[in-house]
Amino acid sequence: MTTAPRNLLVRNSDFLKLWVAATISLFGTQVSLVAIPVVAIFFLDAAPFQVALLGTVEFLPFLLFTLPAGAWVDRLPRRLILVTGDFGRAVSLLSIPIAYQLGVLSIWQLYAVGFVNGFLTVFFDVADQSFLPAILDAEDLVDGNSKLQVSGSAAQILGQPLGGGLVGLLTAPLAVILDALSFFGSGGLIYAIRKREPRGERGRGRPVTETAMAEAGSGATTAGAGPATGIRAEIAEGLHYVLGHEYLRYIAAATGLSNLFSNIAFATFTYFAYRTLELTPPLVGLIGGVGSVGVLVGALISGRVAERIGVGRTILWSIAIGGPAVLLAAFAQPATAVVLLIASVFIGGLAGVVYNINQVSLRQAITPERLQGRMNATMRFLVWGTIPIGQIVGGVLASTIGVRDTVFVGGVLGCFAFVPLLFSPVRSLRRIPSPASETAVSETAAVDAPAQDDLPEADRAATRPDHPLD
Image (cartoon, rainbow, N blue to C red; front, side, top):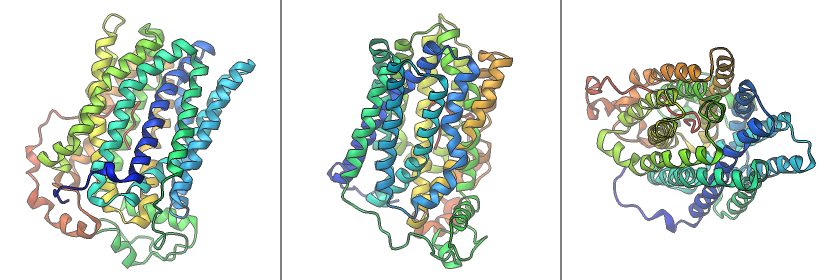
């Protein structure tokens, strides 16, 4: 990618609206991240396995609906999907304080809200990642993703302590109202975006020919080429593109393993924090906020790190740090919990955001616009589909061997999530290629890349589960 100075993205009014919308929504989400587990544990007296199921039902839609969502996102206006997803999640969340006031709140309603919000998030996230390339030039994607990640880190730093304080002040069920309001605000701002995505190459019925697949880059195969006249054919095209791509299939494997192992470790983390470590909601929020400074640091340095050591090495090294961070949490005791958990959140957050910025930017840059939705949907299916599996396994383990031992097991396994990338061509990439130059980059990457033996042996790991890798 060019290193020439770009126009400031703050002059792009449509990106500003998207950025502010994301910031508002992210701050609201931090409130619910603290509030909903507190509702389950303290108001409904949920057991460890029931707490683990909260995460399972929220991420189950990523297994069930992500692939068809990608095909629909490539057919429908993405802005409309984003607005609908925001408003729908707002209404769903409002049902919690209403049920609480009526005295009918139950764990089953929390599961229902989690599933509905997960379903809407499937479509929102696929459309969101596919919408950004429509309003930004390819050269601005890393900068745009970095700014969005800065908002995410700011929300974690400030939003988690704020969420913990609001839970203590308003009670957890009522604090959820603020998250609902944030979704209404986000949806309104996205609705105000003026730029529309190009529709000429999208929609149903476009044939999947060898020429079309060639547009997708040299890493994609032509397996399954033929008339794409239905949802199944379009889903298949997305799967063939990702699984046949020389970069994407390895990124999917490593990210999926990382999310699987980290969610085994932290399926019952809130129960671990409140019951085992005897922490309070405001203190948990403070730990998350202070530790999440690592996310801000990662968002600020991700581009510079990639320029210095290459995007491939950055992706590899960043996923190879989180496992030890998880293990730090496993050794926490009531007297040392604050220090060790802050360190765990800091290291895992820094590594996770550097990884996400660079690998998501790579995916967006090398994928043709007409395949953006299906590529993102397929990746989300593969890498977030492991989250509910990890949550279930973590819940079962926590009920049998104990919560602390489960965190330890997940942390150890997470130290091996980097392996698919270690033996892939991704590690040899110096720069993020554009779709037009992908063939040339694939042929010359080895010339520009450092020797594979230069990678240090110590960098191994996964990332934190409360910030899943994308």
